[in-house]
Amino acid sequence: MPGKNMINKLKQATVLAQVHIDKISQTAEIIPPLHLSTTYVRDADNEYSSGLVYGRPHNPTIQHLEKVITTLEQGADTMVFGSGMAAATTVFQALKPGDHVIAPKVMYWSLRNWLAGMATEWGLQVSFVELSDLSLVQASIQPGKTKLVWIETPANPLWSITDISAVCDIAHAADARVVADSTVSTPILTQPILLGADMVMHSATKYLNGHSDVLAGVLVTAKLDAFWERAQQVRTNHGGILSPRDGSQLLRGLRTLHLRVRESSRSALAIAEHFDQHAGVSSVLYPGLAQHPGHDIACKQMTGGFGGMLSLRFKGGKRAAIGVAARVKLWKRATSLGGVESLIEHRASVEGANTPVPDDLLRLSVGIEDVNDLIADLDQALNQL
Image (cartoon, one colour):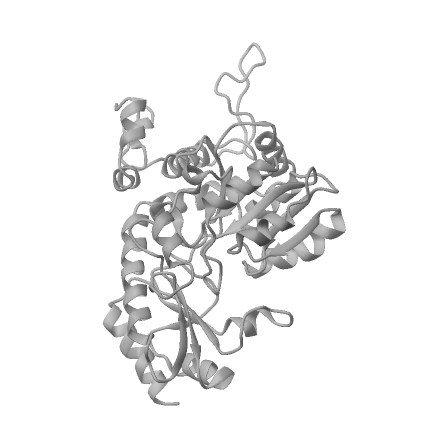
């Protein structure tokens, strides 16, 4: 069995291909086993020498999955949840009424609605700020009250870039912690903890699983502290856990994460470059393009690609955007992202009233199909307008 120091030095591709199978017990299985028990037997002395008490906080399959993700993010510990929303809201529920938090103006819409509604009703004070503007971040800090800054980068669906290290410097100077939603970037392209973040969140439904068949969320912490313990209590008490079956499925999906992310990133860049000067497209929103306002920062904190997500805005407005979505053949008109299949969506229609998303925009999640087929499909849809 490789020693701990060797495990820590392994490349991500090796960790993912073998998912720490060296840590599995005497059974010598090449595939991590699925543990389904919801309860565990006490020892004769009334203790639990196995460390396992009850299935809600303790399950070997889930713990194995958490160890793999901890290694990928180079963190101290991981919790997995039954959805990305369960993971994200746990962070805020670990705060106290009256605490002030800063969140992006443009971010995952469901979490933004939750912060603007239920979180404020519960007693949190929330400021929505353009986090790519560091002067606005600094100006939004409330000394002694700001406890958390939530980053999402690239930010869905306009794909703005936040300088993680710079925001961490501002937040930490005010004794506030930083949590980064790194769903789109994944640990393959960005490791926020190494850039100073205190925690990382993923909607594992997306790239980590990658096959559109598991709902899951992830939190990774940079250090074991009282706040992490409180977040663990929230998960246990609220029951937002992931089932062992879904955990096993997610572990299987993780094994190809690096291959999928790199392929979708290459294809997304090719699509962005193809449509950058297209007569029917007013702008392409993708941090891999040199003219993107966050390109230089993305180059600094994203390694090996700029992700598989981009958005196109159309000169014909909403009518053209919806028309293109209606005419594609390969792209699937569906919500979500990060799967092996390419998805297209008129995001403003999904988000409804008060969305910051322009109605001439289509969000694209690039899968692993042949990129020339994907480009040709978009071209034929545009040519029919």
